[in-house]
Length: 317
Image 1 (tube, rainbow, N blue to C red):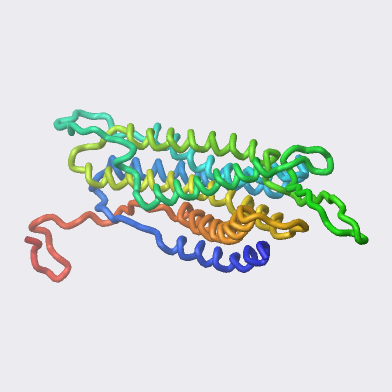
Image 2 (image 1 turned 90 degrees about the vertical axis):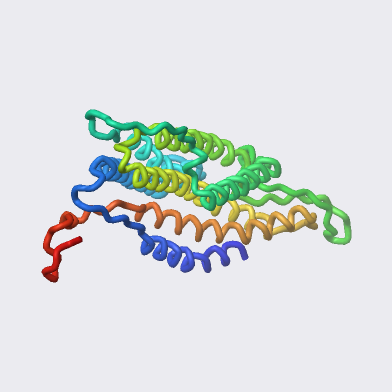
């Protein structure tokens, strides 16, 4: 049933991806307005998109060629992490190299900038909930994992029970796999830990980037919030892209049982059956949002000044 629900979720995931692609946010400024912020926005977005493209290429290579290096799928499982890491590395590089133009400053703003002040609350809560679900899934996989037929630890779900065979009570051993136990959970946990450090580094880079001129502070603050939101979206995509397959494997293994099941196993199975497809849909939406991150558009024509002729012939007051 788990694989059937995941297949049915594919059209929904595609729709979520398309909707996210159509929801680009753009702020338009005049050709002579806020030059420092416009330049910073172009550089940070350009490097972030370049990092996303690099991450997509590496992720695709892991999906297509990872089985040749590791047929058991541990490299393939790292594909979502590669995409998220690409975005985060691009964000760090963009924020560290984007600087306002050097010149004489006539005013300064005394303020204390913090990461918490820039984080969008909804996306922060979503990331924390998804991360908690993934941590729980990996912990359950590691706790319930057992060696497979080749004695690889944590790659199978094994159960032993007594069954009546030919009129006698016989103890039987049943094993299901692949199971997301320590064989997969350990490398995934290491990769996700590195991604968490990259996320914190990217957010700190956003906060520590120097401010532009005082008249551009409002637009600059908006740009920083956009950058923080994109960083959280990249981390969320990685978490959901990993959670979907992990939850699906758990649901499939627990769904094909030969022994009596406990309440905990039933609860984990049905939770995984629901979480797996939802993670697939959410990951698709997050990827679409990364491809169309907010941007600042520069109007080619300068805005009219007082006294200039208006299009209808009356002077602008």
